[in-house]
Image 1 (tube, rainbow, N blue to C red):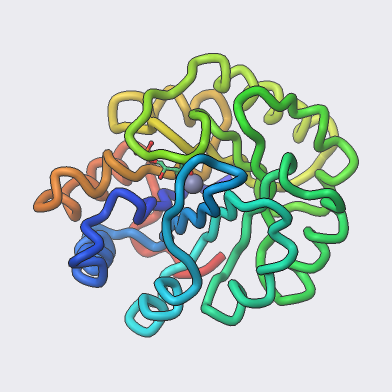
Image 2 (image 1 turned 45 degrees about the vertical axis):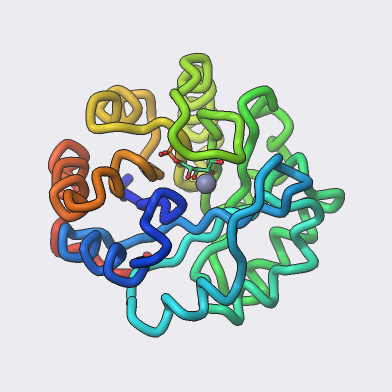
Length: 228
Ligand code: DX5
Ligand code: ZN
């Protein structure tokens, strides 16, 4: 399975968002991760559809939207209309997870499901055949710049083994605390979709170089397609 880096714009300079994304694309970024937070599912508020819509005009990258909101089904169509290519919802936030994943697909988008650190992967066994991505949260969601919680790597290993036995094809993502120091270990555990915020956008004048450093370790195809 091909490795991909998805820089999380939460750590970018919001006064220069478009330029920050451009710098990441110059470094080779082909994906961007958008953290939508509602102040209820997580104890923080970030941004919403207008930001996705504005950035969409200047980028052909894959827009991967992480919904840290209660009952995200309410916003699937609006996020799709804003320009998302994929939507990831939390298992913990969906009363009807099967319906929501199907709804995302019906909008023509890739569908992902995220798990908080304390939620076991067994909670997804029924829906794994439906998903394009399982996103293992390696921090408690709500804030960038936290340290990776080591036991979440065990969940990635277990999920990779499960996927192999079940002959399924979803990507395995990790979100939170990824750096150029630990990304090799993360990949070795079985993740192929790496979200990184602070380690890409800070310091703010090193964005392209940071992306290149990640991509070099990850062996991401430099000529890779914009969308997969
Ligand atoms: C955490 C968010 C992450 C965050 C990652 O709630 O879902 O996507 O932006 O940021 P870093 O890489 O700084 O931990
Ligand atoms: Zn995220």
